[in-house]
Length: 372
Image (cartoon, rainbow, N blue to C red; front, top):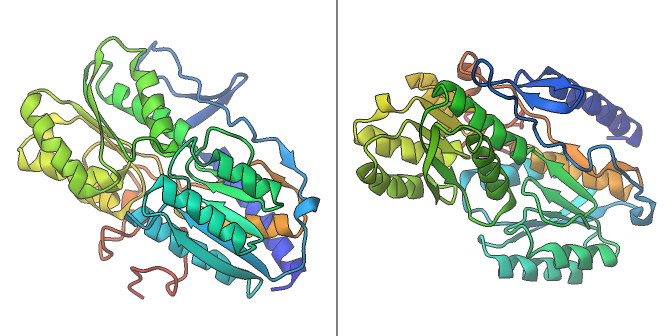
């Protein structure tokens, strides 16, 4: 693909990205910024957090070099279906650059110390850029600083870190998702009920942002009681295992606030086995096929806050832009599908395994679950 065509494609992608942001049905834009709809008549609106670097441009001339580019992907680890699909998207991004990119993958197996070592290894291999799916919000910050000091731009994908010394954050708005999940639950419970919150990996950015945001919403409603918060490591079996004793302990649970539909399917199975599906008035989930299929088939009340696996694809394209010396936004808002109870059947793939995620058009040859 010529540079002219790739530049034209990227301009079109930016227009599409802005359209996605403007068309979201979950937000209203007011003078103070993004706010969520009031869940109850007369209830106060919750102002969604603003992304701090949304309008900050990064000058990238210091990173400019001639292709081909060696790009390292310091992955948190292929420990769940999201990360497997995200890596497939990364490979799609590499393919879309038609030979401009030589990829190197490291797999941290969900371990912070391993990921720190992986970044050191990538630097000794003289990569031109690093894409990072961080296992921890703080522990990777010195490694990010080290890479940047050596002239290697770092692209943080999906999981926020508690530092800003990276080149770009490919942001799927986990903080806003947590608020939207909380508001949906409050709305469905009419401000009164008992909630179980289920995070992913304790300590990573996605879990911290979504859980904290949901709790911030619930704290504004005295009739909402958070019974307990558990961490199911984004895996269905763990969620099912953790949910069983909770069901035995609490006779009245009216909402399951899982930040992940992939793990949420395990909790759903535990509730179903206990014969208490009708008791749950609100569920939360994302665009994991496991969750899409269950909601499409059972019509349980759920909000969808997608976590786009396509972040892996966009990370490659953004890295190439930087290595070409083109300025980029420090926050890149990853486009999201608008999935609702009314259109969920259009996104669910009933003939695909539960491990598939909505992939935004990824070609069959890249997805591990393609049915042709």
